[in-house]
Length: 224
Figure 1 (cartoon, rainbow, N blue to C red):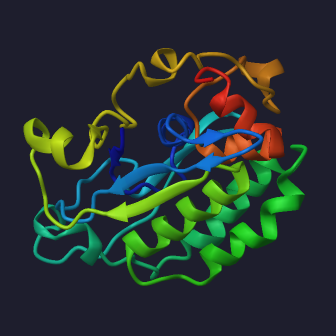
Figure 2 (figure 1 turned 30 degrees about the horizontal axis):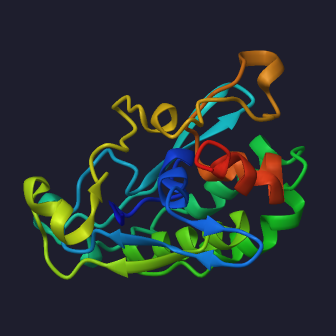
């Protein structure tokens, strides 16, 4: 079964767990999951499309970047949304990420390659997010066949065309049961667990920087 997801900036762990669900990895074969990214919707504010949540020294911290507002972003196709670089949010985000994960076990290993994606400053939100998603698929070891939708399909008609619809299920202001349904509602090591306890469904960078190559074992352990 394929899955349909919205684009996202440093998507949360459940986003990648949903992708990993149908990914098969064994001694004799690799079967990638089929993933459709919604490329034909209109942009939606206050979603993971331009924000993520990290685990900082003061607890959960939201990072978001501005987009260019022309004629109302809610009427603009998501692939046409331009990123606003007039304020140097890239440097601010890199500093926040470094402060949050500088002491994690694998941050130094991945930092330069990841930050180089941000430093390229692509014009469009969709392009930045796509590069970030591809980076984390590679580094977590998830094999996925990424495809873009070629038309917008309402939720009631999605399954026959694009598979399981998670476009609105994964949202920073809504609770979801995805990790529980996948058997993945469990902790992994986090730098500041001693202060605030384990915090789930943070950005995938939280898992990768703390668990490194073992991230795939976490993401697949409930689906074997």
